[in-house]
Length: 301
Length: 128
Image (tube, rainbow over all chains, first blue to last red; front, side, top):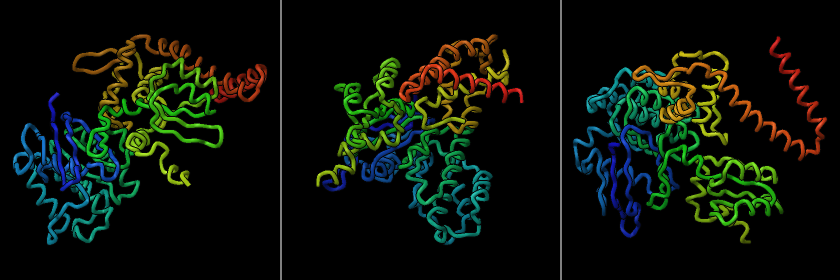
């Protein structure tokens, strides 16, 4: 499949801090990919490298086979949406839409005005007077209506309430169905966005921890809960992503999902509860530095 | 309609929903099935996930493909789905019932009574 973005050995250091560390991956065209990671994992740096806002200190990044840094052909085909988008102060929202529309070939003005109205944004308002959530909503509208072949959202839902976030995901999906494009989307709310995603890329300290389809992530691990001995026996020597003691005798383990139907049934017979591990939780466990989580800090004393 | 927290993957849930539509007679033999894009819009899911659900049905021969036209319900698909569900779902549910009954110390007779009661209830609701 044609790659929209191709990184090879991509590295970006700020002084002695390595934000992106020898990262190689290909982002397939016309898919929605979620970029997940803890605070400081390097998500924004990676997106800015792709958008051409930053130059790499090592390796390369290609967007539609071209170097994005200082490249007008790439900028015409790409939109980067985040909460720091600067809009001209002298123009109102309606005028901004007119102006922005002129930049992008596939811009849909009717859609932009329709969304503006739906989300109760007054076209005569000014961007700098909007609340945090309304700013995000406006930026998101620009991001969707631009219909850029590569659409990058960096934490687009900051400040949005739950209802607006839901509408936004649906608007993005509906427009994507009509006009497929490559969407790269960073978020901390994986559970909310996971249904509309094709793939998930999990970033951990500037490196790729996991890159697979969303369905594969959901089936990657299982949770086992029950009496300590029974749970340990079923887990055997397998890798443990997360462990939590529940009371004196009970244990909850998250382990790789390598069990057959029969094994899972046998586990249930022994009183071990088998549960799915939400993708969001799994990503937290995989990037945790402490296997027991925050409890470790308290248990030390 | 779909449950994101379930152990059952979304694409399997999509396949099961389509099976139920066929079983209920909402989709008849040789009728066109929803496209992956219609399903994606209906359930607010990624079209690739929807396609995966459709493919499960296609792999089992419950739907067939007409090039350029989409997927259609195979003849006698409803009956085959019914057989399959008895063999798989009903048996699994029965196993879980038996296991839970054992944990709770419920006897065979008590359990059978409960099932008989549920059966009567379901019939009554259907007649109403």
